[in-house]
Image (cartoon, rainbow, N blue to C red; front, top):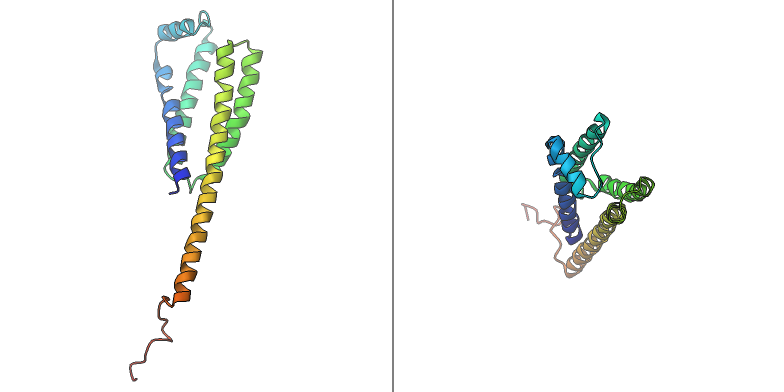
Length: 168
């Protein structure tokens, strides 16, 4: 595993862990939801059943994403394409979140903290993927050069046709 692959795996695990913490919101009491909503300065939580449904189902979606992130982090080379897709979708999703936040008149700290943060994470996924690819290519070139130098010195293995015969 290259240094960038290690950093990428750690970042994906952090994102996965933080996303999975949304499990609390899936099961917390309605009173706690109301209190959190008030503490965030968003006023009273709406009484309509659809509001509670959306809050809990969105939280469950984050839990699922967190678990998937952990799976991806276990073998970042094997899941490189999925991680690249996740990075691209995070960039697009973060931009979309800013638009949604502005249209729904979310507080400035929410607008500035949610979407842009997701965009930065998506960019980090992509940058670390590119660095990891470059590190693997550099390692392959070093290995090929080392093998070429060993062959030039005569350190190559004896092939069966070069081996002395039993009757000699």
